[in-house]
Image 1: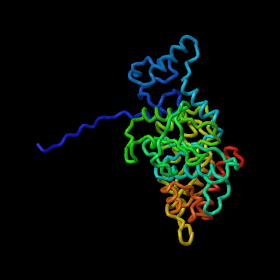
Image 2: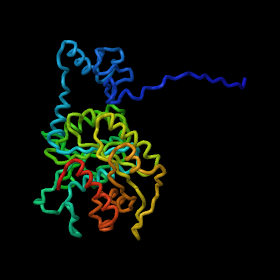
Image 3: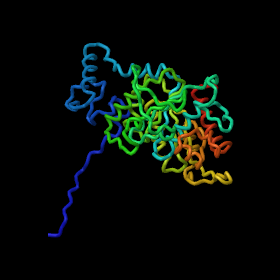
Image 4: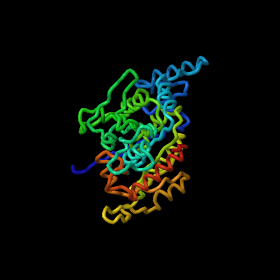
Length: 365
């Protein structure tokens, strides 16, 4: 009577590559696992297509191919191409395979740096007070981390809201030449969670890309969530005609981070996304008293530089773990303009990384 009976039921291994943009069949990220592929004759007509949000579009494409006609073009893709591809000169994705590596911090400081003069302003003067005659680059930061948006905090814009005009959604501006868009601007309070499945997140990302009125701009930095799933596949597919300059991938020195970053690098290679380089963040701790840099996260497998050499991708540099950089993110300011950070190792390290990114995209100050 006390015996326990366990049933062992074999489970089929899931196909984890059906959403791979380089796979032999093209499968939308919101499609069911049994999707025949958008280029199949059964696209939109198979029993597996029932209930799929892409069924109508796939069916139209399948019918057009059967009649020897060109498949219909998604009008949203053409709109994205105009908004992002033609109006913005340089598009930079900031990615990380691992969460908590400082990706959003780097994206925010990259946006600050690209929109600021090469040399720091005099003490007591912020870059927002500088003369407009400097012709600084126009920069946008698009936060597509739908469930964990950090851009408003890290750029000092908490409490701001999005406005809409006849031209589309208007970015929220830090200063005249630095605009930001994030789902956080649309939430009633900073504590509200975005509890969405993949299709809704994908839909909002598409809306950000097609409806935000950036105008003519020099740089768009896109801060994405960690991983290689819905949001990343959607970005690559929506921006495929926009000539993305490439991705900056952020990691920390230890192997537990690098193992996931290798997956991110392989995702970029498979999806045809150029890799501008890898940044090793939190690479040693900078003492605020003596400025000595001490390793905290041991690079047990050789760190990011060795990984880049093995995988054939550029290494952009190391950024220390610095209390001043953490404070900059908490208060939403450009690190270089903080008195405590002026002339420090972290400021110089970030400047070197940004310089390499500019060089990689062909930008000359």
